[in-house]
Length: 287
Ligand code: NAD
Image (cartoon, rainbow, N blue to C red; front, side):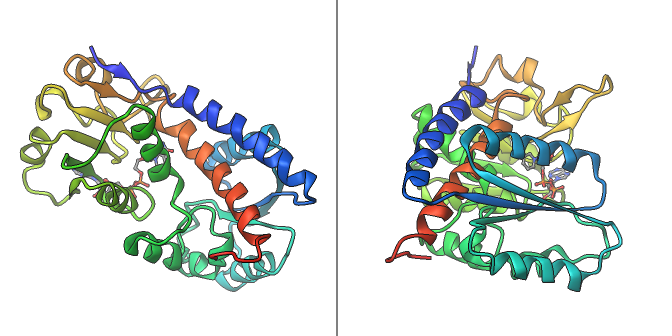
């Protein structure tokens, strides 16, 4: 039976430490603040935004929300981002994805100041991640790395297979694993023989968005499984990309859904907001 990697517990511990950091900052007159922009009425986005505001409240981070009409144009969105870039009291800017189809998310991300890029999505942050500089690491990959650290899973020399090549999960995760000396393979929808890759992997990270996609027969005994996926099954229950019940029997470590990577993503967002507030108030800031 696998060890269940408890992201919920670890995230709680991280949030408790951040709360103390936040109190310290406030004693110095620094009040960390996150601004969240959401465009349109996406139901899932609303849930994510709500859990982010709840985490801010718990830690003592100030929070501003901007709910924009579905019909807003790119210029208006970019103007709002620019005004938040210039607002001294705002330390972090988060643009909730997805955006309506007529808006270009990359253009919007490019507008966010890298000093306030707490999601780690701007070209500047991504470039620094690739080159190995200190930067904001996007929250889901950062959360996964923290889980490896907590469970003493050393990536050095390990075969890591990541399924999914998105800009927000798959690609930055690959960079993080590489930085930790893993041999990394990124698989995606055009990969010819997925099983051939996953079968030899020491660690498989699933970020696909398809329930029960990763099955026991695709994996070797003792594999470490990180399930990033968030899906709803036929009964409306939240499930991951991995067939947990069966895979758990052969894995050495496995993350559950819910209670695995999800809470870690939010904890690392909070971590990045506190980091932003600290850096923006340092004389010798690297940002
Ligand atoms: P995405 O849709 O941008 O990317 C999905 C990836 O899966 C693509 O790169 C695609 O090539 C790959 N894929 C699709 N079908 C495949 C197939 N048959 N074989 C191999 N690869 C295939 O999604 P995303 O934004 O990266 O998110 C992935 C999942 O992770 C979603 O379920 C999302 O909800 C979830 N997610 C969770 C968190 C969290 O905090 N836990 C954060 C972000 C995303």
